[in-house]
Amino acid sequence: MNSPWNCRSAWFGRLSVNLPKVGAHLFEDFERSAWRFETQPVYTMPDEAENFRLFREGKLRLEHPDGWWHKLVRAKTSSGKSMGRVRVIRRPLNDYVRYQFHRGIPNNIASGEDIRILDITGLSLDLPDQDFWLFDDATVLHLNFRPDGTLIDREIVKNPDLDIYRTWQKTALEHAVPFEDYVRS
Image 1 (cartoon, rainbow, N blue to C red):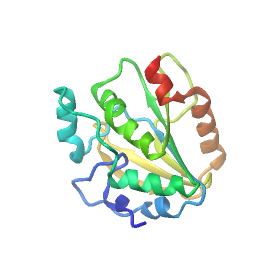
Image 2 (cartoon, rainbow, N blue to C red):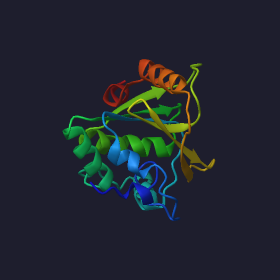
Image 3 (tube, rainbow, N blue to C red):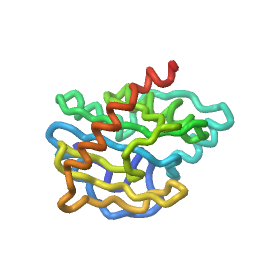
Image 4 (cartoon, rainbow, N blue to C red):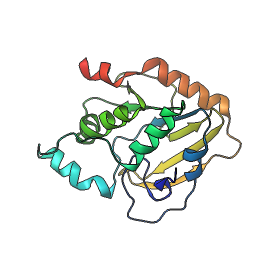
C-alpha cells in the first residue's frame, strides 16, 4: 500500500509545509505492531481546521472512516498486524480533545485501531511528554511538536534504549482504559 504518511501529520491532517519523509516507510514495513504514545493537549493541523470549527459550532457529524489513515489501519489490521495508541488526557477536557473524542478516535477505532485513554489528572506516573511510535517493539519514531501542537518533524531514534520505551508502553497500557469505557464513565 502506498502511504501518504510522508506528507501527512502525526494525527491525520495534511501539513501546510513539506516535511522530510522521515519514518514514512515504518508504517508500510512493520511486521507485527505499531503503537503510539500521544501526549499533546492539541494537534494543530490545517486539514482539520474547518472540521474543528464546525465541531465547536455543533455542526460536525461523525462520518464513515474512509481517509488514507483509515485505509492503512484496515489493511494492516486485516492482515493480522496490530495498531494502537494511548491518548494521554487531563481534565477538564479541552475543545480539541472533545473533538478527537467525537470524530477522530471513533473513526480510528472503527478502522481497527486499539485506542485507550490515559487520564493523568491527579496521577504521578513516570511517563514522558514526548509523542512517539514504537514499531515491532524495536524501532522508535519521535514526533516533535511546537507548543501550539504543530508538528515540527519526525525523527527515527538512533540506538534507543528500548527497555525504557517498552516500560513506558507497559505503564501507559496498565493505567489506560479502552476509549469506550472512558467515555461511558
